[in-house]
Image 1 (cartoon, rainbow, N blue to C red):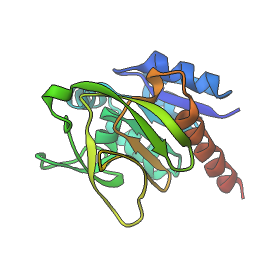
Image 2 (image 1 turned 60 degrees about the horizontal axis):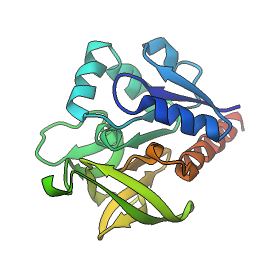
Image 3 (image 1 turned 60 degrees about the vertical axis):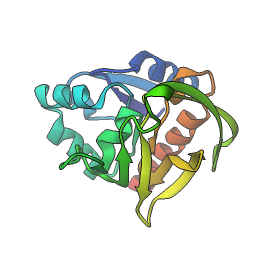
Image 4 (image 1 turned 45 degrees about the vertical axis):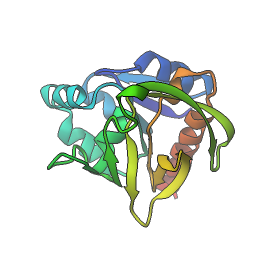
Length: 196
């Protein structure tokens, strides 16, 4: 059984756990650095990215998360988690982890659209995915090795860069677990490659 961690410092942790378990994988809420050991993949949940970064620094997660990213294990960033993975954030000098070759803009759908839902068609996942956006970022630019999986109003809202998956929305807030299942498939493939 795949062991998927959810960084448990802030954000919609319980909902991610529910979604992982619905996909027949084991969920681990990660609150201590040593819990990263033994995971097959990691989800960085939504929340507030600057608060999450403060907590990551306070609890000594920054270097271990960079090491986890470098280890070849897949990571999935949702909403604020996407901002943490991105190599560049518009309006900021430094990225956070900077491992996914995308440029993101925070709160980019505007104040008047703080939260909304949209029906997305997602490559490799399926159509009519009900995506919940809450103060969502979006991907302004993606590197050449990045596959764009979904757009909303011509804005990139889901992309994959090798073993990194990032989305603008909160896939865990509905009962549609297809995107979590897609990430778990990424984790399975990565684990099988590591064994070869």
